[in-house]
Structures are given as structure tokens and as C-alpha cells.
Length: 319
Length: 319
Image 1: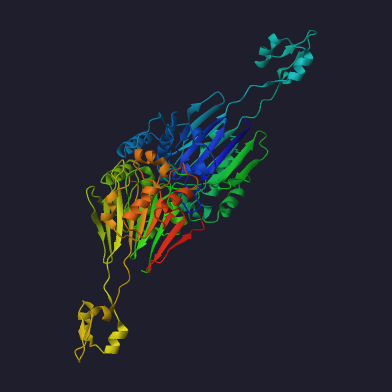
Image 2: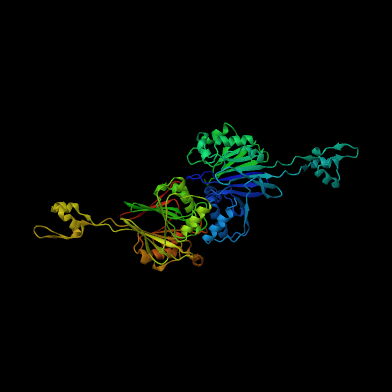
């Protein structure tokens, strides 16, 4: 559990290009894995990233536009062919279940492993998944159809025992539990050792927010202020902001402003319009406002270490 | 109209690999174009082959298994985004129309250009498209669901005038029509020139047969005896023929036998099972029976010149 890693499987908006695929990402955080959006061709991208299908347990679909979910039925039917047994959890707009079940039934495609649907709440930030180490929330975005963002937050972990000091002070084992719960310690002579000395800071907790298709939403900071890694769509350049408004999308400048307002550590940009063959101007536009902006292109894998001192990027050789 | 060209967009059976995509081919024959099957990711493959979307007018779907049609809805919605006006003609199993219309409606995806459905006949070889130069037939195959093959046949063209001889003999223009219609010619001295001397053989008419998922069907020769180019699935090797039988597929050996029986000129093999990472044994198995066997891999484009002396193959650089 040393890193957060994020594989980018697609970066295109509506129309894919020969070298840009529709939206999909694979996130590993707190020893768990999440497939976020699933545009056409995602199963092949997973293979190109050498991500085993057995790691797919949670699939989150932001909205029902084709470039975000047309790869879902192909992936689910491939899992069936691979004799999947374990349940797959699907989080998405309420209509997703009926769309899938109707299509599978009409085409006589049987899925025999359990499909668990978790319809998302349109009205507010909502806890959709929780483990011992992690919370995942959905929150509403502003797009031409119901659309959701996702926020992944590791839980704060308990402070660690300062073993060296505890041994030196020869503290009885029976007292350890109290110290773990935040108590100070008084030695035989009545000297007080404050809990902050007896314990060490826990490893930092990571967070990631995914904001797919949306107009810029100024109050996003209420959902994930201080997020480590923020993905925000940047379909257009600021010079095309009228087009962004008309199609309920954001510009690179607007995405950077959101990162600024949310006090994000790093910003990843994606969902690029097919009109821009060269993406440099998009990243440059964002960086004039928010310096730590990066393009989230297919084939990239981002790592964030616990120290958060830099965002590492690797490129898959198969691209 | 000098060549027949066939671009292979996918060669995998059910489960795609990182370098093998599901079935799709793009055929150019007699100045017309046909997209045959449309597995997931076909629109990206079309771009990688630099095949303009405006050339898509006829889409033929062999059957409703995902690896043959999951790319259809993504392609049709992309055409809408590209503001397509011209009709698209869809040929496929009867259920195709309802499956598409239901899915598009449920996901609120509007297609505003005309979609013309042509349901295929399960019972016999049937003419599905005809132009001045071409006939296209469908015919039933034997698979676990209704499945169809397609036969593209250029019409025989009229014999050409032997201009050199006609000039030498100083034949009046008024007589040309009769010669075109097959008449002989008598000169002033009563010497007879047979029509076969006055006219030249027309360019050969091309033919292509596409046999997607099927058990070997011994009577296929009734549909396309003497076909120039035959595509036949070869999902398995002969050593796995029990598996082929159980899943209603063919082996490379069986495909080669079909090519032999049908007196085909060239055989293309595809729809390879994911279990074979190396395809050489499949081609070798076919060649022991039918020498002119080739693998139809994604990224390949085959050309057959009028002289039919050899099958040319090019490889797209983007693969």
C-alpha cells in the first residue's frame, strides 16, 4: 500500500482518433482497484496496460454517453467467457441497470456471475463504497445528462508507536493500548510524556477526484478540498469557450481554476476534443494558472508516492 | 475499378488480445464499399487504415455475437456526431433493428440520418444488393445462432471492341452495335469474321465470399463455386476439432477443405482463438491442403489485380 497508481486508458472526447481512445481509467488505491468509465475498446486497453481482468471488481460509470460506457457490455461479456465467478459492482446513473439488462437479454448474452448495481444519487455527495482503509463518494456534475464525479479518500490511519522511546522508558505492555488511544504517560517520578512524543505521525492518506464531463462547478471544493490528485476534463481551449458552454464542457483554463480553488496538489487533464491534434496548447493554458498540470493520455500511468514530492509518470511501451 | 481491395480490421475470436481485435473487414469492389462485421473498436481501426467514414454506406452484420457487432452502435453514433446526412444501409439478422433502436432510445442517443434495415433470409441464398456492376448475396451458415455469409460478385462485362481490327477492316459505324451484341461480320468479298475475333475478352469479374462463424458447410460450393477470394473462419487447429464442434466453429483444415471444394483461388483465414498466440501452425495446417492460404490479420490490406496472378498484401504502418 505504498503508492496510488492511475492508468489512463483513454483521453478522447466524443469521437476517437487513431491514437486517442474514449474515457477510461484504472485506479489502484488502498489495496483496491477501480475501473472508472469504460469507453469503447477499454478491454483491449486493459490488456495493453497489462492489467489483469481479475483485478476488476468495481466499475464506476460517470454518465451514459457512449464515449464513457460503450466498452462496458463488451468487457462484461468477456468476463463471462473467461468464466468469471466473483461479483462485479457497477456504480452509475440509475438507468444503467435497465439499459444493460435489456441489451443483454435482447442479444441472448448471458452473464452468470453476479452483477451488483449501485445507482448514484443525483442530489448530493454520497458515500458509495467503504472499506477499512478507504471511502469512495460520488457527487453530481453539470452536464447535458445526469453525470457524476467520484472522490476516493484513504481514511486517516492511527498514529504509530514510537517503539524506540517506549522501550527506553520501559513502559509496561498493559499501558500501550491507552497510548494508542491518545493518552500521555507519567513515569515513576511523575514526569509527563505527551502522546505526540510517544507516537509518530501516520503515513499520509491519499485522495483522488475524477471529474468527467462537466461545466466548471465552482463549489467542487466543498467535496474534495486539498485533494492530492485531481482529474478534470478539459475538452476545449479557452478560445473555444463558447463551444464548451454550448456542449456543457470545460476549457483547460477553467479546469485549472477548479484545481486552484480546490487546493489540489496535481491536476490531470483529459477528454480532449478531436479538433486539437496537438495537445501542448491545452497543457500550457492550464499551467499559466495551475503549474502542476499534466496531460492524461492513454498509455500513461501516474504514481504518487507517500511523500507526494513529485508525480511520477511512466509510459506503456505498447502505445 | 482496377482492383479488389480488402482491409482486415480484426482477426480475433470472442476475446480480443492486446494485438488482436474482433471481426471487421472493409471491402472495395466494383467502385463500391462494404463494411463487413463491426466488432468493438472498428471505428478506430478504420481510422488506423485511413478509411474515411464517408465511404461507409453498406454495413453487413453476419450475426449478433458481440465480437461481430459491438462496434456498430459506437460507429453509428460517431457518424451522427460527424453530422452524417446520407443513409446507412444495414444488412443483418432480423433482430438487429430492434436491438439497435431499443438501445439508442434507452440511452437517448439520436441518429438523425436515415438507417435502412435489410433483414437477412435464414433459408437460402438471397440477393441483398445489386448495382450495374455488382451483385451481393447473403447465405445461411451453421452457428449457435442465426449466422450469415456474404458473396460479392461483379457482373460479367460485355466484350470489348477490337478497335485495331475494326479499323483495318473499315467496318461502318452503323454495324458496330450488331458486333457488340455478338454478331459476326461479312466483308464485301463475303469473308466471315467471327465475333470472337472482332471483340476481345472483357476484364475478368471479381468475386469475394465471406464466411464468418460457422461449422464447415460442405455445400458452400453451390453458392460461390470458383470464387476468387474466400475468407473462412479458422478459429481452431485440427487438434482442437472437438472444441470447434462444441462451439460451432471450424478448424484450419476444415476451412482449407472448403476452399478446395469451392475451387477458390485464394483463401484467407481469421477469427483465431485467443489460445493461439502464434498463428503459424494455423496457416501451415491449411496450406497442407490448400496452398494459397493466408492469414487475415488486422493491419493487412489485400489487393487482387485483374490478372489474378498473385494476391498482394500491404501492412498498415500504424499497427
